[in-house]
Length: 288
Length: 160
Ligand SMILES: Cc1cc2nc3c(=O)[nH]c(=O)nc-3n(C[C@H](O)[C@H](O)[C@H](O)COP(=O)(O)OP(=O)(O)OC[C@H]3O[C@@H](n4cnc5c(N)ncnc54)[C@H](O)[C@@H]3O)c2cc1C
Ligand code: FES
Ligand code: FES
Image (cartoon, rainbow over all chains, first blue to last red; front, side):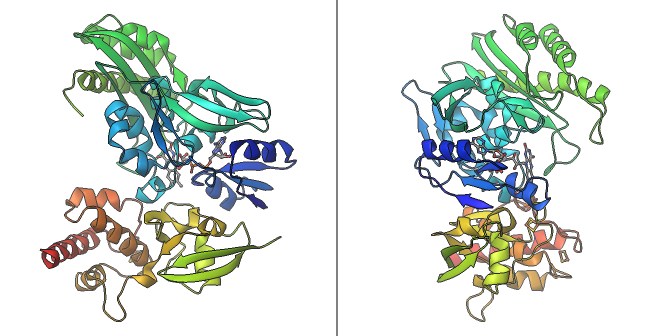
């Protein structure tokens, strides 16, 4: 295995574009090293991104959003008051990943690019309308987070392409988001279902919403029917029931040792209701 | 396989070693530096027996490559006692019998030290969550939690 530590994204991209064997990028390494250890993935070229200037930074964009470096670990996100105030749902999704030790390394970018359908930070990013900046052999392009996963362990990134930053939009007023997952334990487990909701209010009426589901399909789902079920409502019981029905209808899960298909379909609706209530309360400024 | 020359600071001392780039920091600590206090329980980030601090952040050394330690600061269990004087956490673990086989103990001590640094007065729940990535097959955890909370109380009084 060749270990590379380029100091800019163009060089990282060129290394990946020119590599002929198995290639991996190294952010926090909490997926890559586990896969190496298990013999599942033995990279010929490992491209460490942590020597690239700026990858460990969280900066505010000109428009009031947030630009998050590809090597920012969960523990740093969780300690960032400004980011937490704007996007608590995004931060709580990432902070559910692994233990204190894993939080010291694991990144949003790695969570997204590892391609697990159950990745805990991805529904929050999708609900938030986050985009990724991609550096590739032909330059830089920007795409929505939901366009990256292509199925378990797969992404839509082309050879030589890598993510150079994650960008969250400006939060704006009267808005809130939340992420919830179901696991059989309290800690250290993989989501059976995950759901994120982001919404905006005018008075008590929802004017904008995005609902994303994890672990109920080969990729994260952005469920517009679920958002439509609550837009224009005050999140009354009828709206919550319509939301749950739309989330359950969109879920297309498998049965495995963590949960049956039927259970996941049901829980998708339950979590959507609960996450929407939390996002609503946050938008009202009633809870942190 | 070309080996990579790595210079790093471990428990305050400058250390140099040659690492196969596939070797983890845990492998390098144990096999190249003779620091066998950090244990390998799983090698996949699940058990915490390999816990160390890397530039002040608590990590699993089995999930860090040795080459990633270049230019960084590592603290391990070997740096915890001050000569023959045990750290309050180490003393409290003995007093409370918070270990049996001891395999998980170095990792738990390193993780608990970090907890008390960032939160000198943790609740039992905060302590249990912080240590959720440290598995123990012997004690049932209760004595570990008691030892950590007792050490925290003692350390707070010392400062006050
Ligand atoms: C004990 C343990 C518990 C865990 N618990 C959870 C959990 O509860 N929920 C959860 O979702 N995950 C969990 N994980 C999985 C893992 O921690 C997360 O997926 C983490 O966010 C991965 O981030 P990383 O920076 O460590 O990724 P890395 O391991 O560095 O990289 C992961 C993948 O992303 C690619 N990649 C990295 N950076 C880029 C880039 N800039 N551009 C393109 N591709 C890139 C790599 O090539 C690799 O394929 C757990 C892991 C462990 C070891
Ligand atoms: S050996 Fe590193 S977590 Fe188990
Ligand atoms: S004392 Fe044996 S594993 Fe904890």
